[in-house]
Amino acid sequence: MKVPMRKLFSSALITLFVLCLYQKEIVTAQPQTNITSPSQLIDAVNNVRISNGLVPLPVHPILMQSAQSQADYMAATGIVTHARPSGTYTQQLLSLGFPLAGDLSLGGFRSENILSTYGPLVWNGVPAGWQDAQHMNTMLSGNFTHIGAGISQSGDMYYYAVDTAAATGSGQQQESAASILTSVPGGSSDSGVSQFMVPVTLSTPRPDGKVFHKVQYGQSLWSIAIAYGTTIKNIQTLNNLGEESTVYQGQELLVVIGATQAATLPPETTPTIQATITLAPLATLTPTSALVEATFTPTEEVSEGSNSKPASSKVLVVVLIVAAFVGAGMAVWLIRDPSN
Image 1 (spheres, rainbow, N blue to C red):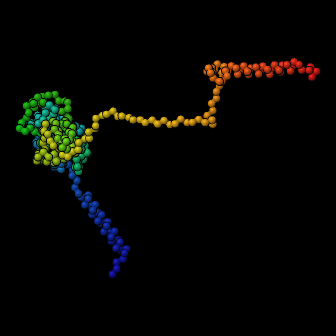
Image 2 (cartoon, rainbow, N blue to C red):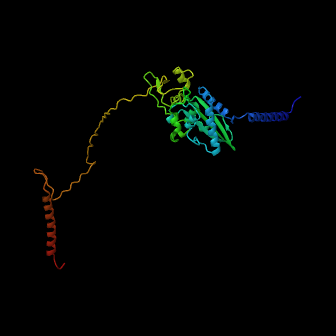
Image 3 (cartoon, rainbow, N blue to C red):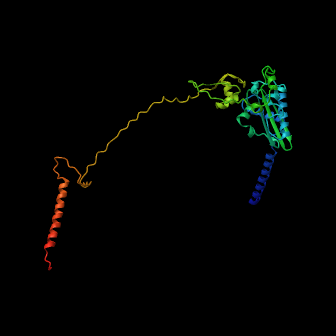
């Protein structure tokens, strides 16, 4: 029994329509990653670290407290800011008892990322406002040892804060902490974004093609890798660091092998210019190629011994001829027959 072509075509269209609706249901049913809790935000940041070859940062209760208080402060004021109600970010950490490492007079090793969104933050990658070098350093610096996060809501607005910092090796406060706590707030310490993103000056390759970098205060393995166009994993391998991502001031790292040295310019010399001038032969003048007109005046002198007559003699001859013609004319006029 043959099925009419029109019926087959109609069945195919209905089947295709049902499949499209089903596919739409599958797409819309996929859950979005809405960040609504501090733990979700910490997991998102640590996943960024893992994807860059770094170990995840453990949570520290004091950083959780500082981040949450900052998120609450932003939600209460409606302002996205690193400023605290009293004191600086560094002073807040020290007052809460965090054993902050680094030069405390410069703020210590701490950093903070903040933002606000209308509705929950949808994390499908690092937010656009955190993709610059300083904000990425907050999440990827190997100098930091702990992390904390806070989220606060005000109406439809959500406020987020991520705090990272480095604790001292001893776990105890530095001796300078007391003077920092009693100092007047101000200066660069008010900023929560890391003040220790020291620009990486690229080193010149050695004759064997190896490039070594001497770590400066505040530089991280991540920022060094980015500057030299390599990866953290490569630097760890070249220097037998294992999984260690913390680097220290003055540490010399092999960052690149097989690099090409810049071309050396030869010493400057004064160029010698040689010019060859070819003279064209003089043109030969013919009677038809040039006309020369000579004008003689009474004052023109003729050199002695010349065969030419003086100009004054020629003038005299002309005058005499004219006078002869005039005299002859007068004579004819005087002797003519009056009757005529």
